[in-house]
Length: 271
Ligand SMILES: Cc1cc2nc3c(=O)[nH]c(=O)nc-3n(C[C@H](O)[C@H](O)[C@H](O)COP(=O)(O)OP(=O)(O)OC[C@H]3O[C@@H](n4cnc5c(N)ncnc54)[C@H](O)[C@@H]3O)c2cc1C
Image 1: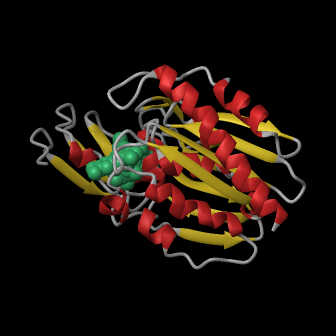
Image 2: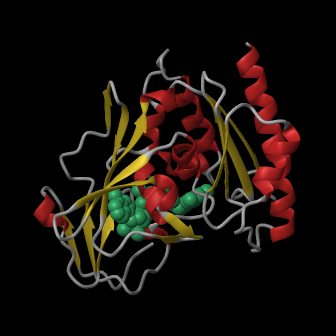
């Protein structure tokens, strides 16, 4: 939609260009920025023109730059040493109206938007991703992606902070993953999503999103029983009610989905 209050648009090509004037905000793929009136905005700073590689591989793992669209990530060829890449496509399909936004929406924009149903957030948290944040005073800090969403649509980023990239460690990419979700409408926004990863050592990570305001992470030294997985998922503290489901429904479903994820992980472990 037209943003009628916006009077300026700048393409960023250097770090200096990222300094925000009052009323400005960052524009990545724009799938959210242009989806609402956003009447408090007077200027846009386009970060898609920053000279950042969308995808970079190293011995340390995978770096996804802030200019990487979901479609670009999904086009990355599969690698034998990174079976967990399969989680990206599953997460992309868990987004509402998924394929409509893949070509424009960025992976990093999804975590910055910080919706509870941020499926890229779900995948990145499950893979122990960290975010490199550029601070407005020139500093740089690194935080777990799990710490960025703090409410449904509320992030821990301060004004003028830019997520430069997210980094996924090679060890996490070597794990096996699973995702289960539920939505009230078949193609509707997810009401609850549970994702999981099992490493070669058996160490298992379960993550609840969409059902909770912020990601809920549970870790186990070995693949848990389905009962333990369900119990751990239901220990999340921020289940919420909205038009897409009630808190008690989400609480119940988080456990059911966790059982399914563990069953899937048990199969991949056995194969
Ligand atoms: C049809 C449709 C369906 C959608 N379905 C879902 C869904 O199921 N789940 C969901 O979570 N979202 C959904 N969205 C919302 C949104 O499209 C996604 O969250 C998307 O991933 C945002 O990425 P973007 O690159 O388009 O971000 P933009 O719209 O460009 O930006 C989103 C916000 O993040 C900020 N931002 C972007 N990049 C950075 C950065 N690098 N550093 C700091 N701030 C930054 C922007 O300033 C803005 O506030 C949907 C939107 C539409 C239109």
